[in-house]
Each structure stands twice: as C-alpha cells, then as structure tokens.
Figure 1 (tube, one colour):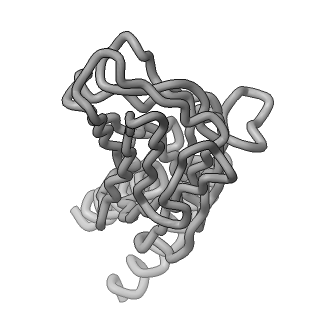
Figure 2 (tube, rainbow, N blue to C red; figure 1 turned 180 degrees about the vertical axis):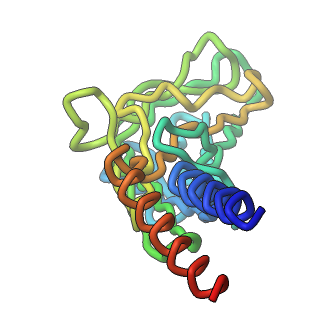
Length: 216
C-alpha cells in the first residue's frame, strides 16, 4: 500500500513539473508613440495620437494601449493582442485620404509576470488612408526583421513576436476604424526527455529514502 502511495505521489509530481514547464501565465501592458519624422502635415510626435492634415483633409490615428493583459504562453506560441489603432477621418467623404508614409510608430510591451522587463517593436508606416475602404490600409513595416519575416524580443524567457510587414491600420468605415495588433507569445522550450528522466530518477530516489525512513 505504501509503495502504491509513493508511486502515485511521484507520478503527480513529475506531471506537475512537466506541465509547469509547458505553460506560463504571462501578464503584460502596452504603450505606443508616433513620430512624424518630417512627414508633410503631420502633428503629434512623441504621443499616442498622430494627425495628418493636408488641403483641409485630416486623418487621425490613435493607439489604444492594453493594461495587465493576461495570456497563457507555451513553446508552440499563443495568439495575443498588443493593443489597437483607431482611425478618424474628416470630412466624412470618400475623397478624404492622406499619406502617412514616413511616420513611425514604436510599440512597447512591458511584462510584469512571470518576470519584469520590456521590449519595443519599431517600424514605419506606409500608404494612404482616409474615410472609406477605397483608400486602402496602412502598412507598418518593422525594422530588423528576422530571416523568417518576423520580428521578436524576449523578456525573461517569454518571446513576443510580430510579422515584420503588417497591413493593420484600416480606414474609418472598415470595422469602425478599429485595427487590432495581433501577434504571438512563446513560452520557454520544454525540457528535453533526458532531463525529465533525470528528474524522475531523482524523485524516485528521494521517495525510496523517505520510505525507508518511515518504515523504520
């Protein structure tokens, strides 16, 4: 009976440790800043809202941050939201369209759980945007993309990833002008099988020792 109990306890311990290595609870917040970089008609550098006004037509982009966003990460990657943009065009006309080409945007992710740290995705906007879908979307092209076409950074073992060329900012009449930034969060790699065998062996050894102590 005692052997069965020890075996059960050890199995539960190994499974629990393996599970904890496969999934992490992650909490993060986001913030964003535009830079005009001399783009024609642009105002709002250094803030979360940028406006381009040309010939009486204006379009404002506002970044909407997230606070204490929770995801469960794993080595295979978990879909995650990194905030959103809102587009507001004036006047409300299909002819309203302005260029945001050259305006840059920096998205900072600050992690608070399981460890504290931050990283930033930086990129430039390209294209025209306005009131109606006929103006198209803005592309946000990130700097320093990897060979796979993605950009990423790691905070305490958790990796945040975005496509390096995102068509993410839509005009006002598409989805109410709200564009969500979607990416991935990857947890640390699972320990190799050999490591789990060593862990199990250690637990079994400890179990035998305790069983002998109890039986005396």
